[in-house]
Length: 466
Image (cartoon, rainbow, N blue to C red; front, side):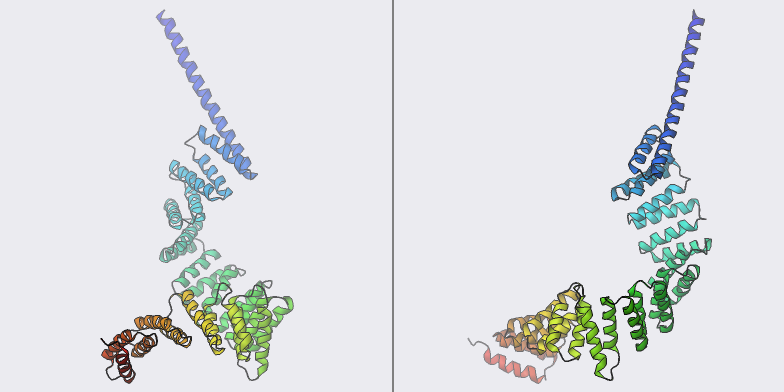
């Protein structure tokens, strides 16, 4: 009896083991089927079906690094912010499941970079390199993430490692040049940009930066050479021709500047920015007759007539009109320049001067006030505030004059002339006591000042007597 029971028990255990083995094999088969289904959907760009299949595989095998990695890649392909966050979670899980694998860490860095979490992306790439420091690609990605995080020293170190591993990476040399440029190491940036161009002659961004570095170093000839190549490489963009013409103008090659823009007009006869550049060249060109000014006005009028004309274009046209003696049209044009956003701050100043000449004092004052609201930090605040005060007095508004002169005096407390103007404004506003107090402050600084002494007598005579 006991022996029969033992045999039954052994058979039962064997049956359970066989069933368990069958279930394991079936789960593994289903897991592989779901992975294959997910891969097929992914390659067919059926992201919803791929995510569903990979999620089913993860449900069967929660410890599968591969399934988390593939689902993360699918979420990343979808590209929405919520999907990118989901991708980052899957990549982190895949990395934790296989701590020695570099692929999940690189993928995590990529998606964090897309999310603009540059410091976190750099950490992921750095961790990847600790596992395998022979990847030039990952070193470049680390450099790019550090650059975006404004860690210039770290970016330079990483990109130098990238080019040591692979000296054929044009993008890496370009990034090195950018980092050195931002560190104001212009001379060191030159060979980096040149190397990038030698590896990839059509790398327009590197040529643009090289031209700007040459310009910053005052090497006009080298700058022109790069701009000429850019104009040849990118003939369909008039911006290239305009930039080349402006460089010719800065170098004093006025005829070449005009010729370049004339050729551009033949290809794009209705392009406003070419007329704007041509007008500026004629306006800035040293003139020995009025023909140049007439050409400047004509070209800028074409540019300014566009509905999309910028504040800067209208400002240039206003300058040309003023130089041509057409003050009335210039005032109207400059008023437009102050209302076309984004506003060129200089438009407010030139409009103020022009309106004042036309005796439109309130418009001139408002333009000066608006200039301050646009520029924020104003190094010429004291002189501008004094102008506003003077206009206010001419408008018979002494209270406003007092306010602006008080601000000017606070900004330049040792300027005795400002104190005299402020005291006089107080008198015009009918406040003799305030005028007297300001006069005494001024006399403490300069006891012999004749203007202040006269104002003292006047303020004392007007003070109420009790």
